[in-house]
Image (cartoon, rainbow, N blue to C red):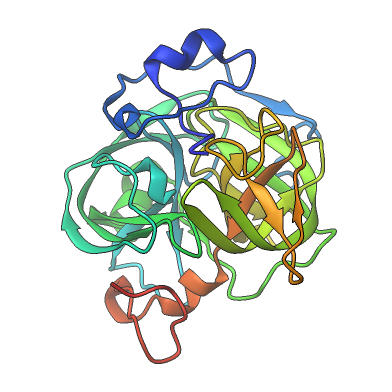
Length: 291
């Protein structure tokens, strides 16, 4: 997961799992990734294949600029990544963070992933948790309209619908400037890793061999171009329900371990909770965990 973040000390192991096993990697210095490329995905075609539009890089993770159906061009833009990518460390089981000050910066990429267009700065963490899901939403100090006017980059749109098994997806990493292509293999009832449990996780088909630094990458539906999830973990060593080794828990309580398989978390619940002004409105019809 926690496996998909990357500490500077772990760079030597990136040919293997390249994972992070300590929250302290939030302090890790940025590392210049290799040239952008596609893994197990068709070459980019303008208007055809998913590209790096709306993608950002963090100091140790990946992320994307996103908007919901109720978002307006004049709203402060939001960046989506993982809860375990927070600069203050990983939230504990049951912990929910809302409206926390932040000045974190994000590097905005161009559509090809070959050029860094500039830096965007957060003003606060709008919402973050590792309970039921693994998500963090940062509010930026600039609007969608201002970003598009200055850089020519629109935000990715969050889907309001659950993704279906068999859907073609792309996992787009701003950290590594890499796009992974595969399908949703199955929806996992519960995914457990150390102290954390996530609901309705996305299991990838084997082609998406995500590595450290891909944490927080958006999962984009190839057909609709909408964000249906956020990449977050994978079982590296075949261990059972331990850090960096999530296990699947079925409705009957049976536990299954799938070494080498990677996962993400659905984001339709987040899309349904974003209200006027891009605020995460908890309660009512919002099913996200509350503080």
